[in-house]
Length: 227
Image (tube, rainbow, N blue to C red; front, side):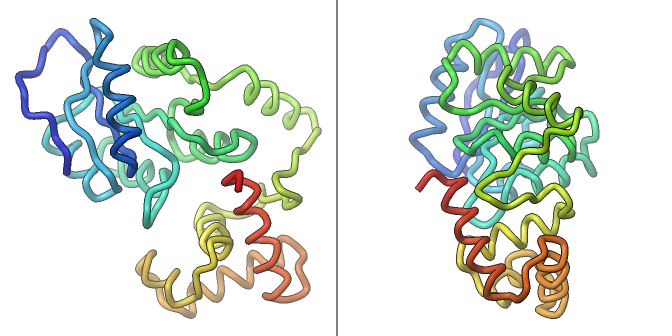
């Protein structure tokens, strides 16, 4: 874990950064530490490190990327909600807002902002979440309103709203090219359970077979990752 061993200014709000890219963490930390009311007290590169850092540093807010090497922000937020139900979480990511924002807000995040936003917007998002408000960009707010009135949006040609959080996670890993046993190991599940999730995904998305599911999952993942 990368931690910042220094005397913490008790007048500043404590920020924990969770991102698996060291250079990205460094840049975000520099941005935050320039503010008179904010201070990065610890950094983490995966869910396990983030949970340990929360236990040790008791931050006021977690600023987390959506995707980690072996997990994602959905799992992190769920774990945080179990142990610290009132902890403020802001997701700061490169991922397309179209779908991910609703997912993370649904499981308990208080805000969602992309790394392509101007620095001032990122700081505004952090302060908004710290003050108990929900923060999303005007773009995603508009998309949510559109959806509420029946204008459903698709991402990469696949509509995923009907999937449970675990089914979405399995779908994402299928799109990454992982086999059933690899997904089972990652999520600490049996292969039969993962296969059951795969079958439920296939049925919900109206795919005829697992090959068709794999093809569309890969297309979706490539679309969302901007490759």
